[in-house]
Image 1 (cartoon, one colour):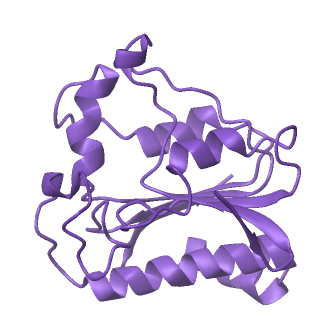
Image 2 (cartoon, rainbow, N blue to C red):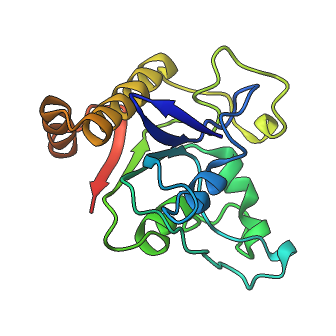
Length: 196
């Protein structure tokens, strides 16, 4: 679903919650074309990618293009059990250390002219945003029990997304500075942050 934020429209993905802001991060990425939704001014996803399932007839490791022109922030956890367990859907070896469809989406599926951020949260699972734990999620059983400080990771997640949206939707100079500083000097909860 597309939600109005700050008199602009932002496409959000929130896996692991008992409700959905839309039908998944892939939908947010593939639906954010200005031809279909010219109002979209930013896209934020967590644990989302555009790798296509072999069950739909795609060859192994197929990445579908994302027609996003608005600024994009792809976030993921380094301990995402759901993405790791899903590798067989895409023709890759189960648990393959090279299976990282979120990074592949950032590198190859987004237009090169799109402002795009990639953020990996250290030790974060696919269900990080779901708090408290929601046992009704369909794939949470694929996650290992969390280790470390999930509250600090959720705080880093919220702070990073908020700065990105303030910078992208409002043109807030302080938020832009905060993002640039975070890219240069990431907090301990961020394993990697890249921008292109």
